[in-house]
Image (tube, rainbow, N blue to C red; front, side, top):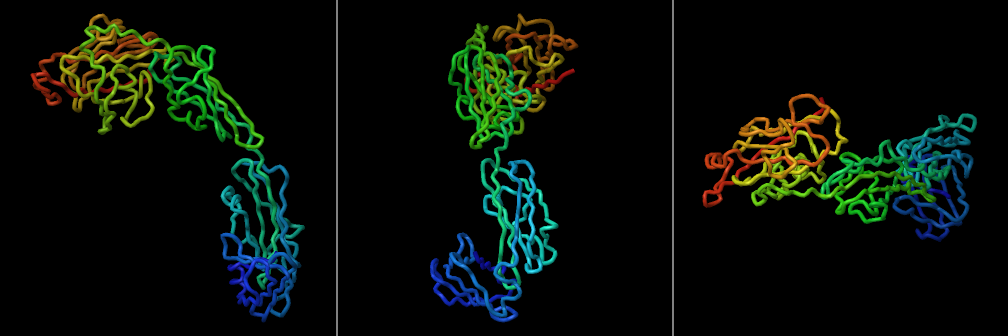
Length: 470
């Protein structure tokens, strides 16, 4: 094969005069005018332009060079040789060795590779000068280069292309098969379910990490029977479990066992799997006090003007489980720290009862509070933590109710049983955070309240949830 590249011919100062039509199968003679005179390349093969290139290739027969302009380089008195071991593996550096068998006849050599290898390899500088003349490595002094490529199950081709002063090129190439990247490996703690148990309708966050995975498939069982679980059954993105995890909301009670099988994408492939379990309990029976006065839905706008739109206010997670209205994944109790929702509109005669579950898996020294936020606070508020929806009297213990909390006031302090302090103690179980206006008549004089007609006022109420460990 005789390759006429535009760059190499320009370096040699070559002028081309074709004496045959430029067809793929015609015999061709190429007259090249160099500084030393005319060099004639004749071949019984054809001439074709390479795909996606401006280079021409004489192929299909022997190429003969004649004339004073051809210099000292003959038809094959130099060549590049490239070698590699048989254990090249994707993601693991391996050694390529190469040399030029007569560097005195080679003017310059370049790094080459196919398109696939160029995209996958970061440290084989395609197009760069590899060596020049006598500076090129020899068979007794081979050059060794460390290569690291990505991808799975692919073939990678590397080469060294050398030319002499006339533009004659000789190349050495080697193909390396990309071995599989190895079996997928799950990180410690995969799969992790948060919380381990919750009421029906509450979301669970499933977290995991995995390496060497091209694809993953999820499956689920409920009480030992295979079931379909929206968002999990079928194809699952390998990286979906990172960060805050993949949010799932089962629609039936029971003990769920999840399995995730990941494949490395090689042929033949290797797989690994991880399992995890969580429990969905029956939804609590509200048995609300004056249920007709419960505000079950309303618009929420989070701090920095991030609207969530119409929101189910019956669950804590929908109020305090996100920072911004655009958050696609919500976090169950205690939610996210420093969540600041502004609830619109709280009717002056209604209350909010936000249900939450303490699973018992929380840090044992976890403490938190609810604050009537000082910016755009709305009227003074009463609050209570109770086992009963809408109950402000029969709370679960001391320090579990407050009244008349104005801007900046602490509405509720709570803690896990092993934490210290005069806080509302929360053993594992289901609870309601109940909130109402302290004096409905105050709404008429509050800037955050609006008369909706007939003397009925609705108010914006801004609160903040904070928590930490002691």
